[in-house]
Length: 155
Image 1 (cartoon, rainbow, N blue to C red):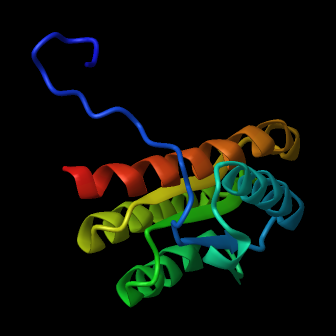
Image 2 (image 1 turned 180 degrees about the vertical axis):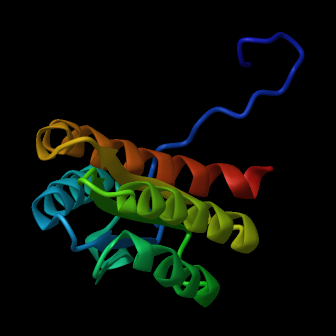
């Protein structure tokens, strides 16, 4: 029984055993990407996702991530997907375009395919902010992907 008497509450499931997880990582800002990926895959393994049930695909940058996720989602091979990368503010407006469009694309893929996607594309002011956040964000994305993969079939 959940916190609300008489109301069914679906508790989060974080057991990753048997789940197939796809990860797409942008190589732009590769050091941050590698930090995100390392934390993410370690958390997936800790939650029971077998390494053989993971696939990592790298692409040039954040704008290439949504199309890759779409192809993976449409394949039917994955229970959940994870987007990883970093968009770090520069001196031009390009930061806003890349941040907004990659996020919009990821949301669009998720909604159009029904495959959950954990968005781990960091958008930060500088490298230091990204480095501080990458381990926690990688872990958070692993847990979110597992939780959503377990939740959706129960709805």
